[in-house]
Image (cartoon, rainbow, N blue to C red):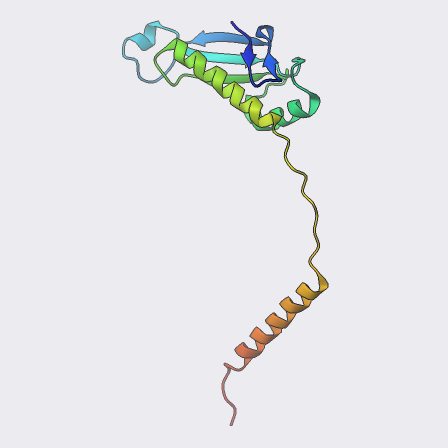
Length: 140
């Protein structure tokens, strides 16, 4: 298995990746009972020196149930009848997940509603309430 190149700065070493194969469910006719086409790609994310701490934290959140207790990301693919294509898809999905984790989200800047805006909102509510109050029964 080759190294997995994510971008110019990040490359996952082959020792951190392992593949296992199983029989896939779904279409395939008689072939489905004989050939192991489903791929389980396992990436030892917690032990990988290619990723920094914050990236690993974001990856854990993005991976969700695919993150194991040992700190590995497990991707299971059985989309096609070809083992080679399923291997490619698994590697692509892992790469996409890592690219998403590499993206640093912008910090939210807290803002406050100005006093003038609060006053305008309350005035508008009062005005609307007055209009609705005028809709009542007319007293003679």
